[in-house]
Length: 138
Ligand SMILES: [Zn+2]
Image (cartoon, rainbow, N blue to C red; front, top):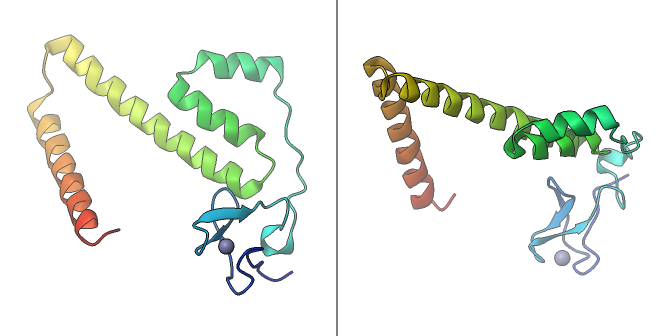
């Protein structure tokens, strides 16, 4: 199966994005992967029903983790499920860093000097990257 074109703009090839096929002219997703499977392969895995144990486990997690995990565990499209699970891992890392920083602050009121310096340097690098990306319009 070939790459699909936009129903409104037949000359426009669509690009695969997280939620489906994106038309640059419409600036929107115009076909889902159910309507036109990516690579000619329709995802065969049906949506997984959440068991009561899954639901209880997800409900016990911070919302920040529960939402992407719930989406990843119950998403029938493998591409979208992988995206959501990667989001969940990224969120888990953020939660762990916040918890670690919180523990240090609760115990001593301040971060160890070496950790404080390392985090400060990383935040500055991220700020510089964000500024540069803004300048080039990325
Ligand atoms: Zn279009």
